[in-house]
Image 1: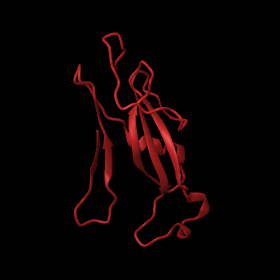
Image 2: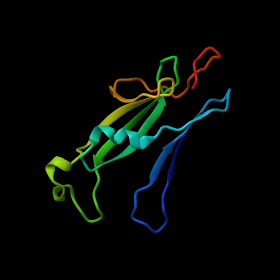
Image 3: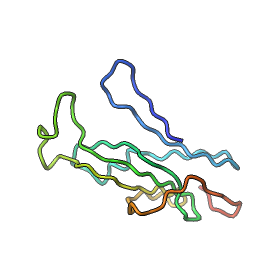
Image 4: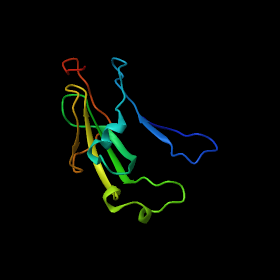
Length: 125
C-alpha cells in the first residue's frame, strides 16, 4: 500500500510511505524510503515512488522503483544548481531485505511482484 501526506496551503512536497502487510501474521513492513538517498550523497536529490512490490526471493524482500530528480527550491531551476549537486533524472530499483536488514540498489530489470505467498517455513524477522 502506498500512502502520501501533504500539508494544506504549503508549497512543500508530499511525503510518501509504503506499507506491506502479511495477511497471515498481521506483521507490517514499512521500508525507510529515505535510505534510497544513500547512493546520492552530496547531491540535491528527491524521489517519487513509481512502483513497489515483492521480489521472487523466499525471504521478505520489498522492491521499490523510484524516479530521482534534482530537488529545487520554489522558483529555482536546475540551471540554478551547481552541476556537481544535480541529481539528474533517473529511475532506480531498491531492495529492502527484512531477513538480513540489507538495503541496496538492484537492477531495474528485477521483477516487482504485487503479491507474495508466505509459508510457515519462510523466515520472517
